[in-house]
Length: 403
Image: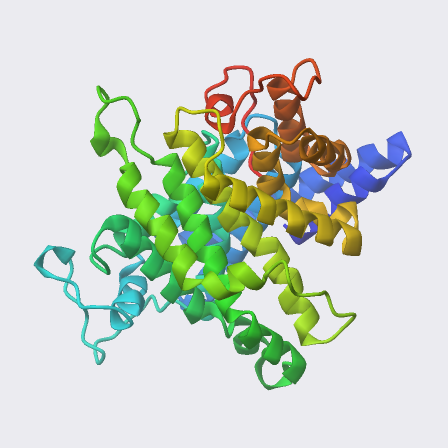
């Protein structure tokens, strides 16, 4: 799968048609070989190390589909559902991990915790935890944009009864899961892991927990119960519950959210890695706030919270662009996409559209996101009424995409 990704990257970078065609054929061969090996590994799955490799391979497949997808989202959906099917029946220990770090399950928790002395064949390693977090982030984005995905549904079942409701239980569970993964690189490298890398990991622990929780908030937006009073509110989270969850995350990470736009990017050292991660992850939380109020409010005017979140995203995006250029914009593409749809500032909107003119060359999903923005602004008259995020999700002319 690594070779398949590399071949497609070389294909994209090649300026010679024959070379690009050869690289694409190589990618197909590697991809097919990877699928065959993965099928055999899943069939013969017997020990913990196999699960690590399988989840890592699934993550590479998902990364490939996200960057070089088939234009329909079918391949991405297949791999996300495959990850969910793989984990069914193998999540007892994951449930124990979150339970041991949270309140005990009550009588409705559906499963009694195992004794520590009992043999556990499916221990969840730091690496498996990290893969689950990364896959869940893509799964949440896919679900929000109408691509069928099931991993977060399944993982939510392992985290029930950790808090007062399902939304808060998910946040608590993913926070614990991310903390369990924080030593993943030290676990894989062993004693040879560089000390400065270990320090970076510890420094970034809190911001990665925010990333995991913001990813779950984005997933929960896809399950937001219909605003229509005649609809069945049991289809998802009600807006009061989700609003409380969003507010809870904002309060618990208040310091880093407030400081994000104040800190400068150092030239080197562990602090540079921390600042880069802050500038990537904090905009995702603010994009969730923008999206949520777009979905639940009928008014076209931005609320105070939306205005504040939009300002934070643009400030961080401007600073990131100044320090790193267009290449870094790919890592905050979703927050920028939300800003383009929700902003009432023509200058901000035009600047974001310029970024997507460059980003569209970096992969199929970004190209489709760029086309979706042109659907929202059909005449390029940025002062006229545009399609908002909630309307764009329902638009029949938009191809599925995940960014």
